[in-house]
Image 1 (cartoon, one colour):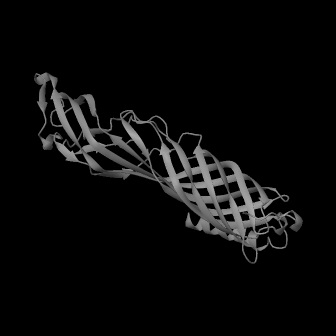
Image 2 (cartoon, rainbow, N blue to C red; image 1 turned 180 degrees about the vertical axis):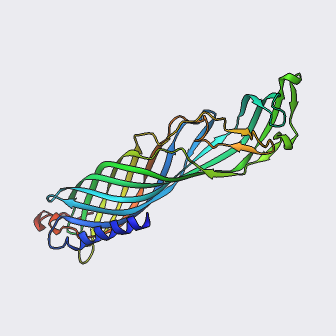
Image 3 (cartoon, rainbow, N blue to C red; image 1 turned 90 degrees about the vertical axis):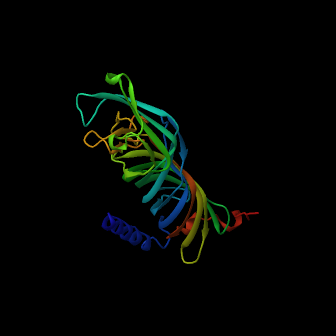
Amino acid sequence: MKKTLTIIAAMALALGAGAQGGHGNYVGLNLGGGLNTMTFSPANGTRSAGLGFDGGLHYAHFFNEHFGIGAGIHYSTANAYALYDFSEVTPNLVHASNPGVHYNLTTTFDKWKEHQSVGILGIPIEALYRTAINEKWTFLGGLGVQLDLPLSGKYSASEGQYVTTGDFPALGSYNVSDMPEHGFSTYNAAFDAKIDNLSKTVVSLIADAGVRMDLASNWGLYLGLYFGYGVTDMLGEKRDNALLTINTEDPSKLDYYGTYGANEVSSLHLLRAGVKVGIDFGWNCEAKAPIEDRKSVV
């Protein structure tokens, strides 16, 4: 992956180096951050948004003074949280120590907080519009689509606790609540694992708008806002697991599947909105308005 990014960066910078002299090409680097999260609706909990960052390389070609097209490659992170305060009942489980005995597992989550984090490689394509504000400042806006490739995902639960109890109907509804060797006890949150059922590709609608300030020698400084929404589902394989269950081979161990690996969510979408800054090289000087048409910014 690092080799691929290096090659793309080198090619784009080479294009930018040849963009001087009025050609409608430029390249740039940008870094941003803000509300970079995943939207979903837990069946038994609530979701809260998280923050993230976005950084990458972009290239643009303008066909005339105002209109052009842009592309790039970005890496971003997205974060979200799920909060649980409920009791989950998993019926008719087989006891690992005695396969002939069935029981119902009740797991009660208390102020349980799970954090999900995803790293994403994005490839945007945008239609661009620019117009000069005055001699030094230019408005720049874009609208397009982005192919998002989730590269990695993980979840962790480190806040709250849960209590597991077992009800054995064959034993006259005998209830077990304090036998940790059989998986029945009170536990503090301590789970950390990979998310392994994300979609390979997500299509997002993107938009951005900002202003660019001319610097010396065809360099420029950009400040703007960005927005993106994943119109396709980020959740790949849907799973029908309980959020937590007792390990079938070793009852002293508990299997926690995480929000995306359980039956808590049926769809998952990216949502990004924030501020970005950037620096670019090779801006076409013809983008500026004639001197007699320039207006000062108050």
